Amino acid sequence: MTKFKIGHTGITWGFSNDITEQAIKDTAELGYNAYETFGSVVQDFEREPGGFTALLKKYDIPLSAAYCYSTFFDPADAKEDIERVLGWIRASAKVGAEAIVLQGGKRGQLPYPYFKEMGEIFNLFGRTAKELGMTTSIHPHTGTIIETDEEIDAILAAVDPDLVGFAPDTGQITAAGSDCVRVLRAYKDRIKHVHLKDWGGGKETGYAGYERIGYGVIDMAGVFEVLEEINYSGWVMVELDGTPKATRPPRQAAADSQAYLEKLLGDRAAWVKRNLR
Image 1 (tube, rainbow, N blue to C red):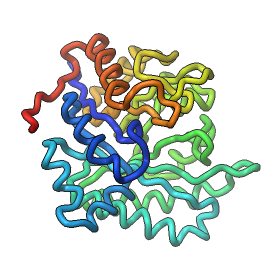
Image 2: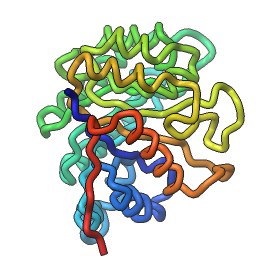
Image 3: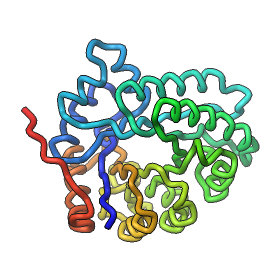
């Protein structure tokens, strides 16, 4: 029986650095196994006394992954992006992250013509992360050059599978018009990291169209069936996009997702009881 490692990302609490400690505290106290944030946040905190490591130690929770976005469209004009992401990767390794999650830049009006070249840059990121003891995976995202089925196919064909895997986001894939269970099954042997997000079916939810796990339209049981088929041992990171229109506090949203997963998975998911003061 597969035992799932389930954590939570910090985006539910917001994007600014000043909410980071509260997000880590809530995630740890709820019993999630790990926390995930942006590579930029890790790097910013590492410039301060104690750094990000001190926060993780204070709340006795590991960093599962750092999310590293890129902004380039033309790989020939990606020097700044490359240096920035490499800096995030190195900072994340120092605080014990297990994984690097990569996002492509914003999409244009025409089909993206540079998948081979983008794949070479992502291979560089993957090689650097592997040397530092981390995995690297590509995260499809709406509004980026890796969004549709065809674009997912193209970038995964362009990267070295020994260096770069697949980090599906169930909500983003569904919002882009695809069947996330089918996509996960198609690339199940490439999955190294998962963002578990529910989708509201196109209605206004207060969470950029997304929903707490189990409150949307995604077949969550089907998602975990695919992960069980491959005896998946990587991180499953619950995620919900926090916005000013959020209909409940971030901690409550995270608790609601947890309660659903407890019911769905039973003892296939373990939660951590921490003695925090």
